[in-house]
Length: 192
Length: 134
Image 1 (cartoon, chains in turn orange, purple):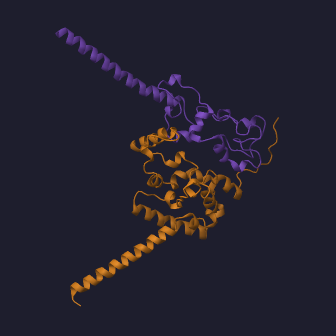
Image 2 (image 1 turned 135 degrees about the horizontal axis):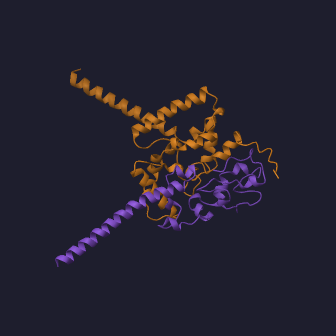
Image 3 (image 1 turned 60 degrees about the vertical axis):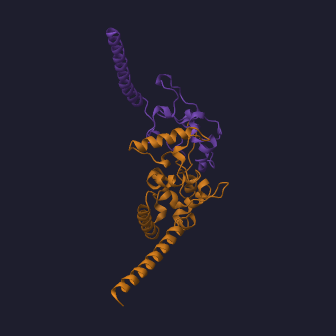
């Protein structure tokens, strides 16, 4: 085999291997981003359950269903998405397997929602939202203009900073309370 | 003609100077107002200016909010109550209470520019069934 043929064969084999592995990775990324997969872990059951009650989880007249990764991974770039997905994947498998997930205070962690719900995810679906001039609730035009203004000022807020219960139908706290109640509800004696 | 031009230039200069002065005064005034009328932490975090809640251009004429004003962002009384549904079982949901149902006005407990008050605590000890009013 001469050198040119060898290089050609090498490129073809390399291309096929690259394409094949890309398809496999793409498939893996696809099947590991939805509520069925994420909710199969014990600690994510309340999140998956309340997601299904939400507009984004299929509770809408169109039957549309988003995926966990649509909101909980950044959508600025494919590279950033893949890096974050890999990092989250490694972290989640480690935490779920080797630590006591029942010890995680999910109710308190809801306060850090800005850190794990990405506006780039929201806006990759709701692409025209910030430029709308009419809305069922006119207040949303004002608040979304505020979002844009803060972004332009370099002092951004996140979609979820306002939409604090989005994605879980406002029921995540209630569902988490079934597992670990915030209050004992005892001693509610009247003081006078 | 020369005098007329001079007078007109003077008028333009005075008007321009006044506009600049008013604009310069307006900013510190707004900053002072925002310092005086601070927001609760959950709204401060959103970096809201006065006009997000109050209508009009003159802060002197801003009116206290009604519950319906709050609900333009917060949705409905039912939606607000549903966020605390886990408290329904023990009838301690302040947004859907044993006494008032959905009919309690926001400002009975919540206050944006001053410390909030817990209406339930006027009769009950709430330590074991309620957080601080945000």
